[in-house]
Image (cartoon, rainbow, N blue to C red; front, side, top):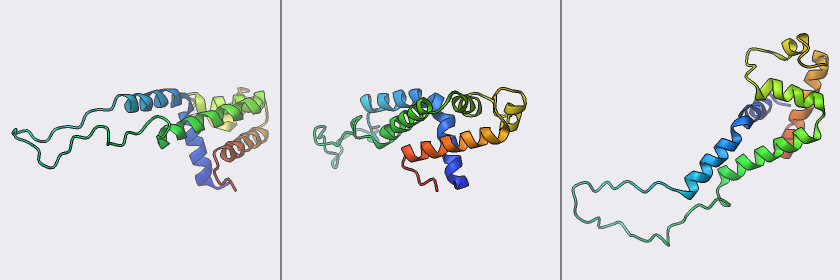
Length: 141
């Protein structure tokens, strides 16, 4: 797996605990859009401004690509976690979901937080990342 793809998938995993709030925030932005600011401060009429609220294209929740991508990432991670074993799930939780920024995989294995060898932990993590990449339609090879 290329390092750039691995880093991208790791960033997605680090954002996983915040995904529900990102999804809620984006849905609220779409449901309650902010009105356009009126630049016509001095008064008078805006000559080139058409008022056609029906004709304006409104992005709905089903059409918003960013929102759909967030939901797709969340679903893919959930599926991968469900399909993975207990040890793999523990590795992913300790490495990406918790605030163990200073702890490396070697430290997690040495402290027996993850009950496998370092080599096995890297293998399990890498296989999880490959499966996640496949579910997200990312070219992992």
